[in-house]
Length: 157
Image 1 (cartoon, one colour):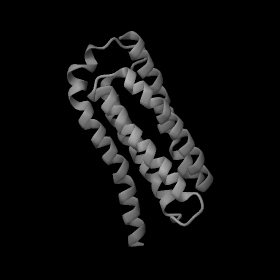
Image 2 (cartoon, one colour):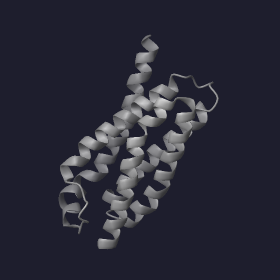
Image 3 (cartoon, one colour):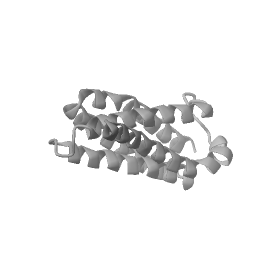
Image 4 (tube, one colour):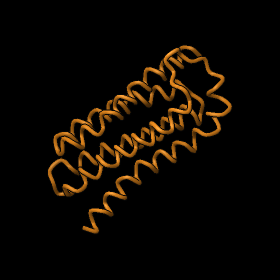
């Protein structure tokens, strides 16, 4: 029982830590660079991003827990954890490229494979635990939207 709670806590902390690392690259640019960009009409208000990402990282953590509790020896679990980890790395890199380096182009180059990895992770999670897979759908949808927004920002600036 104690092991399940520990796995749940660690599973939730991992994506939240990714969000925290990404926010370190984002903080100064959100204040002094991002507001100066020309934005498309569908650009969400700035205040919306933090709560949305916090919720998405929470859902990712719960999904990770559902997969992890199946056991590493369960067929497909090791492989899908690699996919999950890889998409987390690309998630952090997007923040570094787009906000840290202030490069919508590098952000776009990163976010396209990120969306593909999220989709593949969703498929693989769903095969192991359908609920875990479906918990990734809001993340996939938001990141797909972010890809369109990233491309629009690149074009407009």
